[in-house]
Length: 152
Image (cartoon, rainbow, N blue to C red; front, side):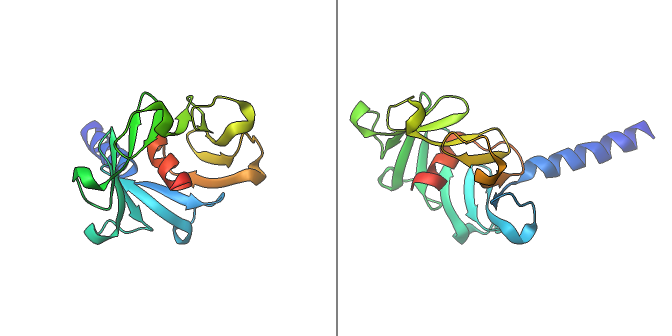
């Protein structure tokens, strides 16, 4: 009996980790799924079809579509900063992540906040109000992927 419960629990946990859904606003309805993340790839809507990959992320580079060619790199994630293209120069910083908030450029100034993310809700600017929820995620999504969704 314990073995059966363990197997059922493992399957449920695996399904929860399998795909991270990103919903419009404060929704959890499947009809409101904007995108989903699976294996470092951002898919359009509920699809996990090869041709519906918007971006893919390997931990450092963010590529256009399903490509892994260096010519298709649109952003670089390095030391909690999102850079334009393959660059890591200060002048190419698009956004900076400080653990909860994404800021414009190399700033950590309160008024330069693009959004904040608590692991479930992505809210505009530095807001803490439910009315300012832009996106809801089913589980924690990497900040580089959120930055790509919101900026590019």
